[in-house]
Image (cartoon, rainbow, N blue to C red; front, side, top):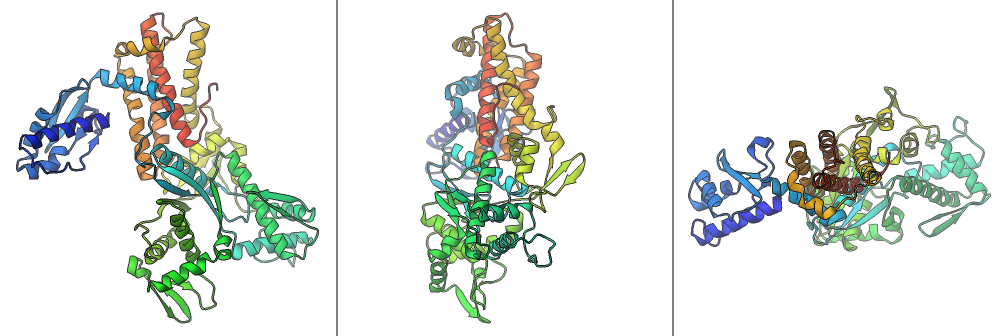
Length: 562
């Protein structure tokens, strides 16, 4: 509907240019067509006249009136009015809302999608956990947010590439190797010789036992085999990393999260990409040496102070491989990059972007887009759940999925804005009640599927064409409200893709389910009146389609029975 109204307004502006009311060479401004907060103000409103009044040398209300008179007539518009300093409010006809139902049936699974991305390639990086232990609930939030961002971007016409970046180099990996070696040597947490920085979870014992048994682990086509040698730290390191990568992949698969590419931090060093990036930064004159260290002038690009790149001991600070990694994204054809991280990474964002700009290789300012998520608090029985026996110090994603379900975990972890604190209530996630949002939305879909089964049992054959032709019979307020909600879906998908906020889809689905349940209770569907029954079934089926499309964007199932 917004697109249709925008087209009508553009036609009106063209007519005003032809009439000399507006300069002939005046381009149309980026005017808005939005739904007013209050329904009494109309179904949609535009500020086009307010933006053009100065160029027309008249006041906004006068220009708004001229624009209304210049716009072509439309069967979709029941009435218009001027409001405030020059807004134009539009009231749509019942037929306009009914047409949305037909459009949904015609588009099916494609309804709500748009071409905003124009087929450009965007790389979406998410989870990117160190392969040092089981995934925790925070990783789960990163996983579902990143996956859903990828889904809404794909629905907005982007060519999406999903990527997982493994931090398989550095101190934490060394701690993992020595922890596993200690276990392989028969030590346990609490023993006098147990390494101070070791990982204490039971999973370390599992890794060590598998290594000593000579098990083979395959990850992305590479096979690593253990051996009965607790002294070979390098072999232990490679095996432990592979074993935990496989475990993380299993958890992510159970969670419905997958990737097109797994990128190893170690490859940046092995392939010389870190050194190459540093040489380029030096060559472009944005570095200097001081105190035996190599510094990057990040203040040239908006940072609050310059940053050390290479410390006096010759090692690189952690943001340098991040610069090399994001450079590789650009070189691999990612015209846009989205990086989803925990909020604790906030401090490195400015220096990574500064490093990319300092390379002066055409990377646009603001590359990559960052989406930061806050941590998750898990509650059960009114008390916070913190520990997992397997992990030793935190609740794992696997624990949460096993206690609830993959659908519930995905919904609850994505249903709020990423930068907001999130409380995951296990009891609520397991409940089969209207208070549980994922149950409430899924039940709406299952209820419509049940309607179709009941229709068959009663001998009612649904005539889809007859139903679409009879939509004018749906003139009651609950039906009109449901159709209005259905018409919002495409706008929500576009907004979610533009702002990288998939929680908007979850919020919308709950509102749509609420409108459906209200209509369902007010308007019996399987009535004896054939035309009315077919019309109501047509509306119900359109609702089922939009619910399924929206749930798919969240990676949540749309069950036919519950």
